[in-house]
Length: 238
Image (cartoon, rainbow, N blue to C red; front, side, top):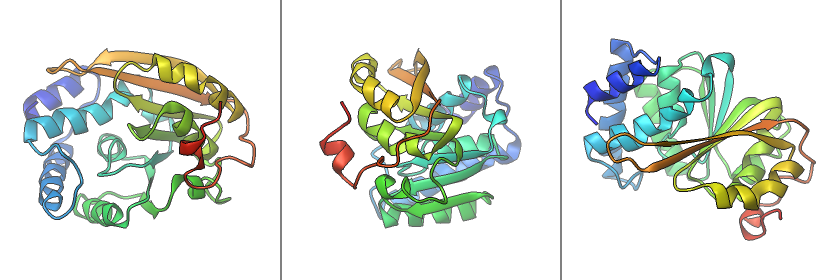
């Protein structure tokens, strides 16, 4: 996917990029490749693939969810900034928090935000389990997102405690998500969530499976969740 096709595909879905936003994506690509030579950020470095599999893929959540209606977004396990940084570029009004457990990645993201002149982006070097128990952030976000971090039963415990009541959790998933949905039913309910919808589509060009799982926060999360670091992964709620 070249830059022209990228902007065209987004434009057809109601997301019109300004010259400055197009430039920010170009800078993002170059910084990602440059830093990837020093540390492992991504296995994908070919420009058309970065634009398709990282940038465009990150923004697909906006095809099914109205980002203009929210202010605060938390991205759990963002890695090299996906999905939240591409979404922030498209929707500059958003106040973004990014949580990642690796200090090196936080260093890259800080540099990236500075170079792209992104405002209202905050980075937290923390485990999601610990972060979700902090009173200043717990149940405070309009929207919490995660892309390909863990199975949905685990991801729900990492993300739903951060979502405010009547807020939303979006899980971005690749291959068929039905089995994960079945395994996560109890966890989502226990943690105060309710599945609103699952949107399935194919990524352009390569036509690989993608799923956007939208979960509403209908009740408060019990105080015991998230449990200690590592516990959700070892022993998912079931």
